[in-house]
Length: 191
Ligand SMILES: [Zn+2]
Image (cartoon, rainbow, N blue to C red; front, side, top):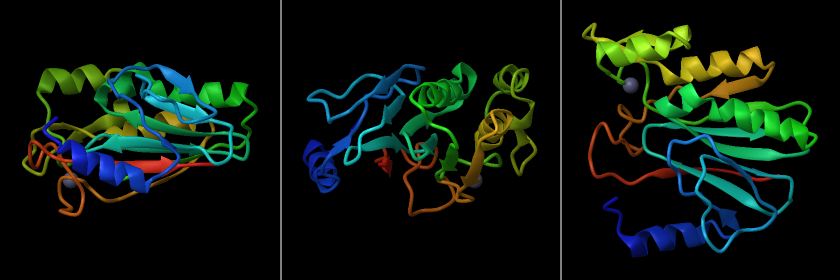
């Protein structure tokens, strides 16, 4: 919202043969073998086709890239995505497509010290994702989404690397929590 359409188009053109998605904090997974005319509405893209890049756009949520020799995925994981397990759904789908050893890359997102939430919301999330428990530096309730996601991925036997950069604290990255409206940055992956 509030993005300058021509700036968005110009930036996206740089990325060339890249599939974007209309992200809605849902758990739909779409497999593509070419860039579609219209962006699919989903929060996870998978491809087994070389030369097709997948992009996830974020401003505080986690841009998750899942890579293997057989398939790659770009996944949008926010609080809703952690709860609806979109990442695990994408992972399982990759395995049905023959992906063996899957490695996860978590890009920059808002950190557990910055992602302040109401107590009830925190309790709701940690009921199923205890590792997501966090407090802000002021000691108020917060959520550590990357920690929760890493716990899920580890349970699935996936290796991972996670950015230590916080999008709210690092001015290079866009953050909804720091400024609204904001731009978004893309995580891009290809086979
Ligand atoms: Zn932070």
